[in-house]
Length: 525
Ligand code: FE
Ligand code: CA
Image (tube, rainbow, N blue to C red; front, top):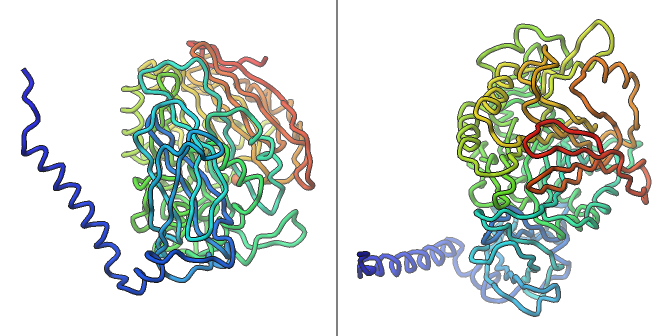
């Protein structure tokens, strides 16, 4: 027989409540009466709209999600608020007019975190749409839409999401997001290069403000410049997102604490990384789990969509060893076969493997940055491989794919960004034997805008395809990939636009691929 709850347990609960309340008021004390009066107890009046960066949501779970905004009346000038604490009210409703509010609460927007707001909502029923907005003083945000995921023990009939990456503000318009936000999706996954760190250049489609970014304020302003784009803002307001970074959120092709430039020492890169990671946290709908601690921020994590799909969201930048052979495109030399080389780091790799062992999902998705297939990028006798991608870390790549094959991980699908081009690849443990069984399917999605308009069939496409028989498709236009997942099959639609140097490009489904349950490898529709 089970005992009734003891008095002690009840006391613990009430003590916990008191502790939380005490903690909440303590956190206000150091700022004394000035803050209390000016910011918390008398509601602020704004001359300029503080909600210029819109709203966003992310990290959806069966019982809640993260709601995000950041107060920034002067978004390109460090935000524009005095260093005080602001109280922000949030509301979550079951209708798009916000008539039926099901939860509301208050969060404090602090100057240390750039007046960003991260609300972790809990206690909601699964698999439902919600609408939300924020109020601060006399200002109110626009309304965003978000949803909870299905309960973890339920097998949903269907799940739709899109994945995107690489959105240089200078090199093209975000037309793709205007199309994406009109799609019928449950989720958006961003695989990195959300911003670029470079200084403003002439003769581009748009211009970055200021030079190459380094300080916390620089990174804040850069995220703000991107987020003021109406199409990007609309796509955030329309769906919950899962975000992960690549290199340009800090600096091109950095590896852990090693800069691409030999003249930059590790301490200097880590200082810059701390600024960059904090601005990323402030700008994204992330959980407090991902709060930065100095130059570290844990971004690898797991997201579930009932029993249908697991996302293993991977970080291939923060823990990797340096690129071999001096980076770039190189033949496969000794460095690429270094048994100590790693893209994930030991801790993340073990976490990933144990997650795959425990998974009860029909589709097991590795959402990550760099191409896993060992693609020879050079036509003809000579062979060149990207040292920044998995081919530069051959032992680690083989170890992971062999693990997936040996343990019979159900339906592994790898999602990739980074290289501003579309690829569909059959993944092999040993690419020297193209007739070996395919162990997983890789969908590489092109950029939203990086590299400009692009081309449908890059030069030497036929040679590239014949020298890499595991590559099923390649294209170098701008776009994103829409996926429909059911218990029986996976469908990827490669959505492209023909230009991003002027507005209004229509959306074209350039190619579609299906993976059948139990049969790794994609077939063209
Ligand atoms: Fe990129
Ligand atoms: Ca990249």
